[in-house]
Image (cartoon, rainbow, N blue to C red; front, side):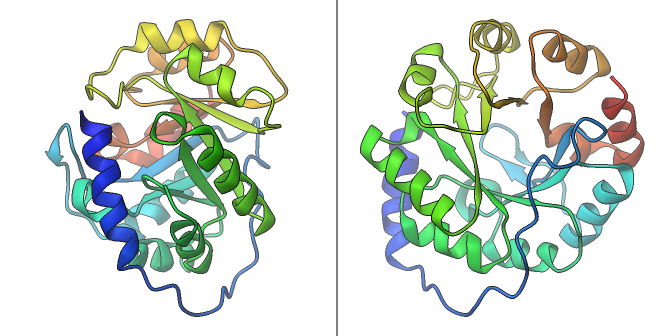
Length: 245
């Protein structure tokens, strides 16, 4: 399965990570600009399902998102599957004044350290990739550094694993990371059936105002959008429209 392959590759990648330097920027609170700004706009040049999406100047793309009214910038740091890097994260963090999400397949504290040192304000933890102990330890470690954590689920059963962790942001991914297929109706049903003192974030497959409206109707307050914005000739305008839903 895809996630098993990812996990093995990440084990090897972590061995080669060198955490160096000192963080030179303050942490920007995630979600502080709700409800006016709801879009987490993603800089994503490639993906496992689509291959190459678009070669761009990553800093320019992030600044376009900021100009359009994004709530935060998501930066892919996975190189193998998404053509991302911690260098991109570092550069973007110096160019925009929005909170930045480090999006990767995080399995080890060294990756959290790399995110922190390179300017991230938020990290992504994928529940289906981690056992309970690793998930809790990585969550607590990130919080100890002052980082926020977006905890991602796909299935309702995964929510049961995190509902008592005190999370502030819960992402529901329409994409099944085991098959890489998107099923928005499945994600809508999950969102409809979860409740708690956290911000619900809809992830993947969001292309239109109707999509945003559907997810808003089941309680989603933020929207992680990548491919649609990367392919758009005017991502600024799209973000403005999505924010108005």
